[in-house]
Length: 109
Length: 115
Image (tube, helix red, strand yellow):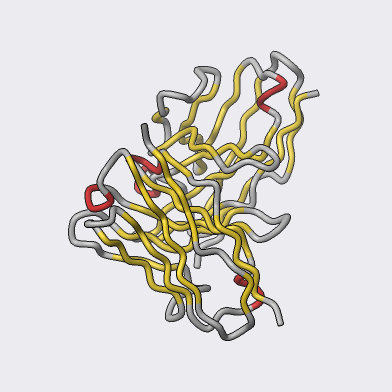
């Protein structure tokens, strides 16, 4: 089974910009992995922010954007707000099965 | 309004069986892909299984393959996860994820496997 890697933790200043990445042990992440990004706050169910690399749901704040960056999937937060402090997970798909990354704890400080 | 509600979580001994249910309102379970995701206490998310729309093709994580079975009942608009040969490392909060592009998550059903 593939291993999906994320930064364990990142810190951003209020109003600042931060990029989280999502890599695959099998090689470059492509659109064919249908990358997803989820946000989870303590005690809450996850929320789906980004699907298929860069598409947003209606509830996804405009300050979040997804992309393919080099050989990884990326989630960029531009203009961080205190309420963005959370754990962020990426999900990649491999021939119909999914694998989550270990999550990135984002601190807004 | 879309609702996703899991039920069936329980405490159970190793080797036992359990069935989780995921009741959906707001769209038809037969028209969308539906997924189970679990989260062990204090740990990250783990993808468990998916049932695809249309023909109902299924897929499983290696950790549950051969022990868990995903299914759905279109008449009840409900998805199920049948879990056999449960082990201590299956202890987790099990989330149902449904809707177009994994849009909607339930609040989870807790499964505790312990002697």
